[in-house]
Amino acid sequence: PGFNDPVYRARRAELTRLAQEHTYDRPIAVIDYSPEEIETWGAVWDKMEGLWDLYACKEYKKSLQLMKENCGYSRDSIPQQRDISDFLKKTTNFQMRPVAGLLSSRDFLNGLAFRVFFSTQYIRHHSKPLYTPEPDICHELLGHAPMFADRDFADFSQEIGLASLGASDEDVQKLAFCYWHSVEFGLCREGDKNKAYGAGLLSSFGELEYACSDEHPGGEDGKPPEIKEWNPAVAAQQEFPITTYQPVYFLAHSLQDAKSKMRRFCEDLPRPFFALHNAQNDTVHIDRPVRRAVGCPDE
Image (cartoon, rainbow, N blue to C red; front, side, top):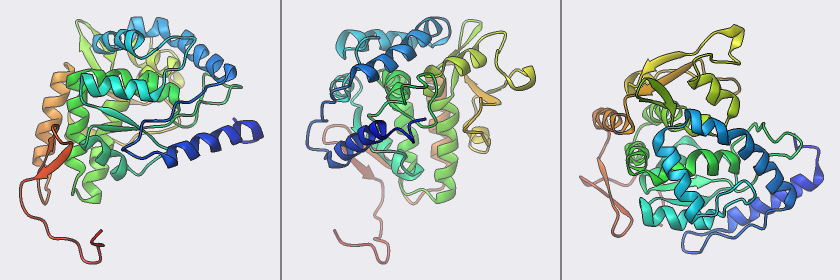
């Protein structure tokens, strides 16, 4: 929607520059969001707030309250990625890192291995506050960030990342599919209800209601989605659309259940080594020697 808006494109270019200039050893830049950007954020917040109460998992609701208390989350204020990252670092040892746009699946998942979540800093165009064709801060900060304050979810995400280190392209795709069907669009069971823990649902008012309500409004031809039990081996093969509601969702018994099944799946993937993250010095150790690939630079 902002392609033909020179002011919006200039703003995106400015935020892209800040993301590209960021280095891991420097604090994340503070963004001075405009009243127009804050108004867009507030429009999304207003639409989502009641739906979170109805359909978000209990871990999300607990973490969102912590974000309000510690990171400046509110409808009238866009929280700073720096504050969120500092809070997550103290809570679950996760951290945010600004990025200019989409990364390859391998690069993105490799970051999760180090408990790093790459996040954009721009917001959707104000003309369509309830629609975005790409991830923006409403998706990243309202959908993803609160879940990283939950230990089981953070560990679950890192399991996928660690498994991606040294994995073949085919297996990286399997892991990316698992990520899509869980971290982006995952459901879990609470009592007799299905609740959302995936960021793609928690930041989309239409799809959250479609996936979790008994009526499933908005489905193509009035059809409800198919709900499958969370099984990473099946999710790794499940194709998905990126421009429409998902026809298939995967339902875990709990976040602990999702994590344990993902861990078993990752352990069975053929890999040249197994990786373990050392939180003390933020390094990854592998369980056997590896040989440098031919043509790989020394530095």
